Length: 424
Image 1: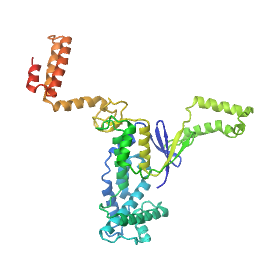
Image 2: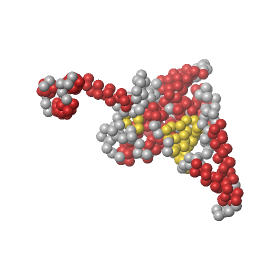
Image 3: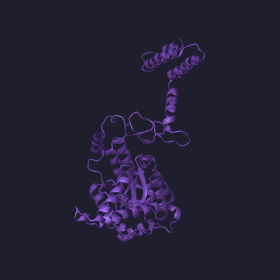
Image 4: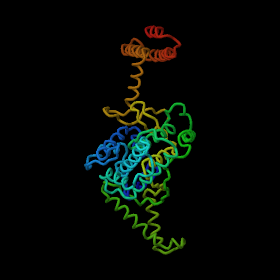
């Protein structure tokens, strides 16, 4: 897997490929929340169907079939809808899925047939790997070598540890990553999680870590370094670069003289040109957003990227919860907020506007006591318009009626008694 750069800052992160910003994620965390909720359960069957066109998955014999452009289109579209990472890294993800599936399939089948050994010829292995990854001609020999080594390691591990009781599953790593991140959000950050919502984030992280990561989080060795320069990597893919080029040029015009000045060797230099350059640079940083201390990471897969994102959320004490209306995760600014700002498909207003009314209606539909209360409320309110009771009398009645409703729901009085009181 190739490594890409991720730059975290106070507003989220930028994801780079070859110094181009491929996509950005802000602190709404919508990319992350969409990812944990999307259904990826179709992926294993889709990969099996793809592989089966070219290879018999029980005998490993290759078939006389040439892959077409659309053979992995549905897989690509499903992954791209899950997260923008997959849109930009699809080839690596897909090739990795092929390698993992081929290894698991071979090992499981061989074990079931009691023929598991180290003698699966590397040339035969590579022939099948290349056939299954034919749509991606850029797959390097090093990739083949790495997956064959993984196969041999897995064989030795199975011989030592014991049988494989699960058939091969396509996109196993992607399904496991989604489950891990979903679990991490729930146990550490979701303030609506029962039993643990009163714990602090560090306490919840400790609970989660000892439950699920007692031996550490595998595959999380990432390279980290700090950057104080905000100029590199200004270009974003798929848009007009002209303004970015002008910004880079302007900044270089200001700082290039300083980079070559005597300040590097003599901080007390009084050379007029150096002082003029320094003053221009000082004015620039006063009038432009200053560069920050960025945390840059090199990541190899989506698991690493999302794990880092959740860690940043933990460090920022970010509280999340599922919206009581649409059921999607959102950032809760305080614990009293129950509804998000999203507009659910088919609706015209955001959840925080229509959610409470829908929630109350559902509650009323399930409660005969609430239905009786609502009818009595409307009747009493109509009497105000007709002049039969005053606003003060209505307010007094509302207070008493709510208390009677509470007692009824708490079984302190029975429903007939409550309804008889409402008719007084």
